[in-house]
Amino acid sequence: MNRTVTKEGLICDNNFMEVIIQPNADIATDLVAQVIANELRANPRLVIGLATGRTMESVYARLVQMHRKEGLDFSACHTFNLDEYVGLPGSHRNSYRHYMNHNLFLNVNVDLRNTHLPNGAAPDIDAECERYEKLIAQCGGIDLQLLGIGLAGHLGFNEPVSSLHSRTRIKVLSPLTCAQNEPLFTPPDEMPRRAITMGVGTIVEARRCLLLATGGDKAEIVARAIEGPVTSMISATALQFHPHCTVVLDEAAASRLQEADYYRWIFENEPQWQSCFNESTASGLNGSPVNPKQRKRVITPV
Ligand code: GLP
View 1: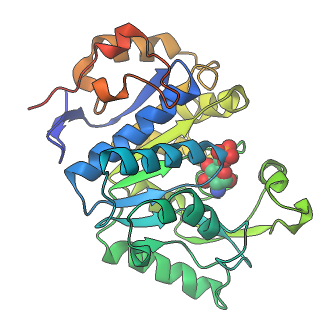
View 2: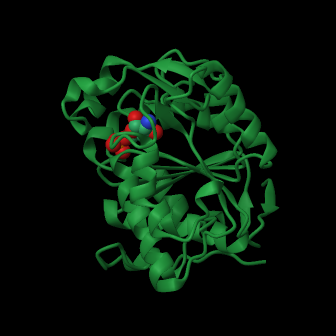
C-alpha cells in the first residue's frame, strides 16, 4: 500500500478516493468541518479552496462555531473561492463574495486581504482569470480544496464538456445549473448566465480535495461522479484521478452507489485508512449521536 505521512502527522494512503458515508447531513457536515479544522490547526498558513452553495452554509456555520468556542484560528490562512458570477460586483447580495463574507469571513478572524474570489465585475475577464491563476500559484497552490457538487455534476461552474485540463476561465451556465441556482435570486431571471470558474485542471492540482454532498437529489449524480466513467460531461469524475480525495456523503446522497457496502466496510474495518475521524466528531451540529461503531474509529497517529 502506498502510504505517506501528512503534515498533521497522520497516516494516509495515496491514490484512491476515500468515500465516507455518514448517517445524516449534520454528521457528514460536522466531519467535513473537522477535516478543515484539523488541517488548519496543523498548518495555520493553510491555503484553503472554498466552495459556495446551500450545502456549504452549514459547513461554514460549524467553522464559525469552532472559531467562537474553540478558538479555531483563521488569521494566517489564505482562501481562494472556486467561482463568481460574471457581472456581479462583490457588493451584490447574490455575489459569492457577499455569500462568503456573510457565511464565513466576517464571522471568523480571517484577514479579508487574504480571501480571494475571481472578480466577476472585472472589465477584462480573460485578464482576471489569468490574474487569479497566478495568484493561486504565488500562494504556493491550494492545500485543501472544499467542493460541493451541482446537479449537473459540476465542480465550481465546470459545466458539461469542460475540459478536464481546463484552467480558470469564463463558462456559460447550463440550463440545469440555472434551474438549481435561480431560486436564490430575486427576481430569478437576474441570475447571470456566465461565471468565472477555476478550471477542472486548477481544482485537481489542490493537494487534497474534500467533497461534501447531502440529500437524495444528489444521489444520482454522486453515483455517476464516483463510480461512473471519467468524462468531461461530469467534471467531478476528474476526482477519480486525484491522489488524495475524500468524499463525504450522507445516506441519502449515497443511496445510488453500487459499492456503498464496500465503502462502509472499509470505513469500519480499516481505521488507518481514515485520514480524519476522531472523538471530536462524535456528535453532529445538532448534537445528534453518531453510530457507536463509528465512534471507535480513530486516526492512526505516527
Ligand atoms: C454552485 C457552485 C458549486 C456548488 C453547487 C452546489 O453551483 N458553483 O460550487 O457545488 O452550487 O450547490 P448546492 O450545495 O446548493 O447544491
